[in-house]
Image (cartoon, rainbow, N blue to C red; front, side, top):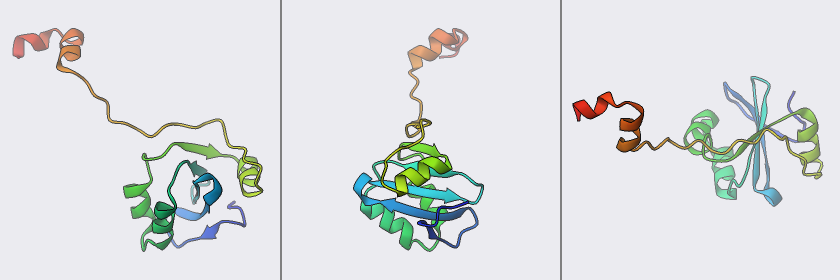
Length: 116
C-alpha cells in the first residue's frame, strides 16, 4: 500500500511518487507493490517526472538504471517520509554496460584467435 504522503498518478505500472528535495531522493511506488528510492535525482528530473504525460515512459527513459536504487519496506518509507532518513540496505548502483576487451575474449575463448 502506498504511503499517504505520495502523489497518486494515472499509470499502468506506477501508483505514485514523492520527491524528498532535502535528500535529492525520488520515491516511486509501483502497482506491483514495491516502493523504490532513487538517490541523487535532481529537482529538474523529479519535476519532469511529475509533469510527464506518461510516467512509465519518462521513468524508463530518464530514471531507470540511471540512479542508485534501493527497494524500501514500509518501515523505511515511513522513516523517510517522517524525516528519520532510514533506508533499506538493498541499494544497488546503476547498471553499466559491460566492457570486454578483445584480448580478454581471446584469453577466455582461444578458438577466436584462429578466426581473427
